[in-house]
Length: 212
Image (cartoon, rainbow, N blue to C red; front, side, top):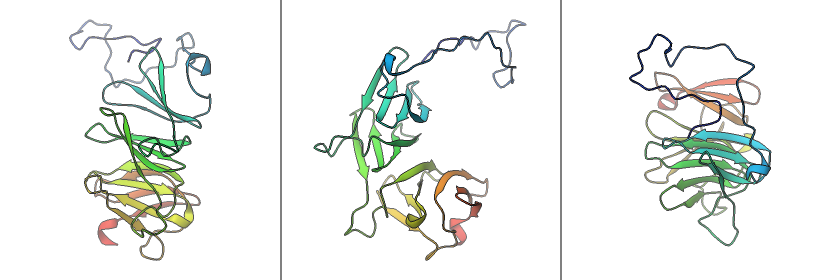
């Protein structure tokens, strides 16, 4: 996807004006920005998440659905109560992509996995009679660790979840069964040693699942 104001530089360009891709350049006030809004096809102007996937599409999480932008127009996916293969909720909080190109969408209705080939969603949600399901459906963030597991952050009372994408198995982590502290989880990072850093309500937590 080529966005307005960007310039394509060939990998073969060895001219003196070519600059390393990782070089930090000063902001140029004259750089043109294109503002995209409901006038261009977004469902609403309230944006909560954004991701560019491995094929170049821009995915935008809004308060009224998930939108895909191809550089020209938007396609929006929404929750449909009559369709179990639709998005879990129109409140999209976070978007991540796995190694297979599947998208994982954190919503107010659990976490949804999107297959771009079939354009179908698989929902992972709270099931009152299933202790191995999500403890609650309000999901703030999702993160893939180096082992390919999805870590899911939610409300303080729901703790932390780890999901195995291959089996769909969920593991709950809570102050009652682990060393994590109570608090909503808003973000993750992983240390080279495999341990996790959790951004929570009142603190930054360092958690090592391997030793807990």
